[in-house]
Image (tube, rainbow, N blue to C red; front, side):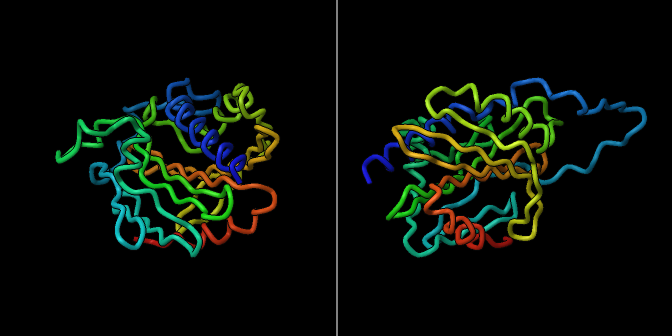
Length: 219
């Protein structure tokens, strides 16, 4: 179990390192060009606001999403999430404006008996018009370059439905400390943000993925 916890922590730290990397890269070929004289700008949604960790789970009005942790899963507290982002005492007691950050970790829930976990991240990508498909195509290139996990990335980007909305999905498998960890990345564009839902699990706990996906509901 200690090994699983170490690998789970390593996977999270790698996710922290990857945050923003795809968005900082140029969009891959095929992303298209935009002529402002030909296309009217789309209507802008409400400004981004970080979701809320409640007594019963997590909810985000901006992303239109709720999460109720299944049995045997524990939620990280808001303070723990802030600590993961290196935000601590400096924001205690303050009405901190998370919209000023490029990457915001909104929620994390972890199994009490395995290495399975789910993380929700919000990212303001650069360039701002990058799509979910383009973001995942860039991750295909970046993940194998991470030496700590020896990632093997799937070729296919698929579409899946979570809480009534369509997400783009990419799967990668990594090995660290002799333990195999699989990560499913689900991405959707909302306004000027990407919502990034990462589910990490082992081959033995793949059945927990559906349980976690079913724990999401519309806001």
